[in-house]
Amino acid sequence: MVAITKKIRFDNSGYYFIGLPILVLLGFWDSYFSKLFPGTNDYNFYFHFHAVIMTLWVLVLIIQPILIRKKELALHKVIGKLSYIVMPLLFISVILLTHVQLQKRIDIVNGEISLSGPSPHLLLPFKDLLILGIMYIIAIVHRRDVNIHARAMIATGIVFIEPALSRFLIEITDSVPVGFLTTIGLVYTILIALMVVERKQKKGRWVFPLVLSLYIFVHSLLIFQVQIGFWETFAKWFAGLPLT
Image (cartoon, rainbow, N blue to C red; front, side):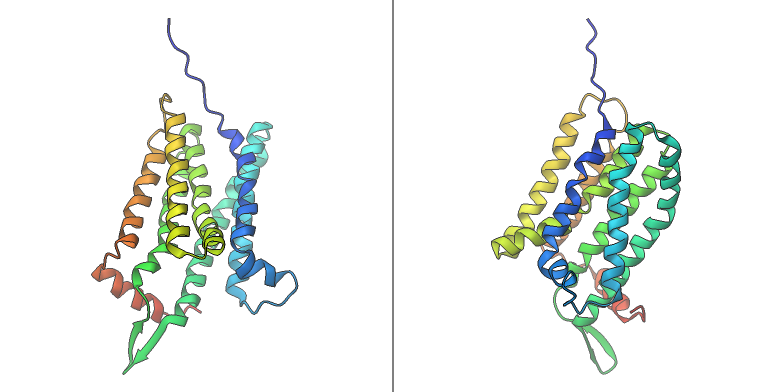
């Protein structure tokens, strides 16, 4: 008897991603939303710009699978084409926000730029952009192959978990190492669980292992405080750009 492999329904992912806005609200409540609603925050344009674009992308992640599930293919394609605008804007928002935050760490001595604090921490936002960009490109290149396209789009949503969840856990545990390491463990658990669930699938199974490998590589650099010469140079160059 030939065993029948149950097909994974990626169109259910939109319902799971409804939890993302809740996670983002919890993670950024103290630092952003609690001050935004009563109008007591002093954040500049870059914070608000990033928040709006990030919200748009989360909505895309929620709406697109649901449209597929409801056979609304025409609208799904329209929103897919709009993502060609939203994703570059998301990249720009992260780069600008990272730059404006980096300005707080700049010291200029005799015309030379130096940064207070370890530059490997700058890997955090750029790590997110790296994984987000790779997964989005994979999703677009394979947009006609649901097995790869759906997995890559799901991976772009997983990228948002770490920034929000780590902040939330750091807040409630009052410990950066505990919050950060717990978040990493949970993200890895999600990816491994997805890999286990789809272990009998024939196509696209390489997407989640690729994401996990990228995470492990960059997290290892952060945890072990690996100093990379060219990254030090890049961090100072980036900080000195007249972007914000």
